[in-house]
Image (cartoon, rainbow, N blue to C red; front, top):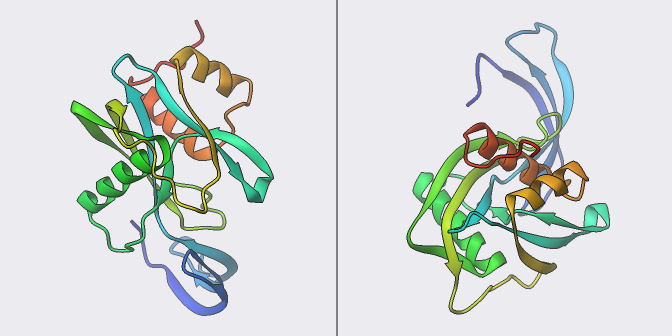
Length: 195
């Protein structure tokens, strides 16, 4: 939610495609009377899902990421195509990404727990990520149904101790995954304290 009286004085679009828009804006904020010029990348919102098995293991995917020229371990995530999606539609997207990227779904009695949202890099983008815990998951009968453009190389279960070590060793370096792990730890749903 935007706070205060933000006044956009001018806006110039440099680039746009179905996933993002790059704009230079001159904006007056509630705290500063002098307008500032800023280049902003507007992106669709996304979901990030922490899949947890009945025995408390976390599912991560290893995915190639072209911008950083690496394959990294991360939680499943994906864009929300509908800019006006309500909470139920956002939950549906989270469950779809869980199935598509990992081949897991909620087990009978499982639950999808909303954990709030965060901004991925508010210094240059408005991209918002909605965080979810998918607790008590099981493999889907049909397995993963990945989109053609995805480069998911691996999908594995990790113990909380392994996740903790991977974070400490910088083997997990994805902001989505680090953010959701911090949220889970703050809520007492995942212990990241050294043992």
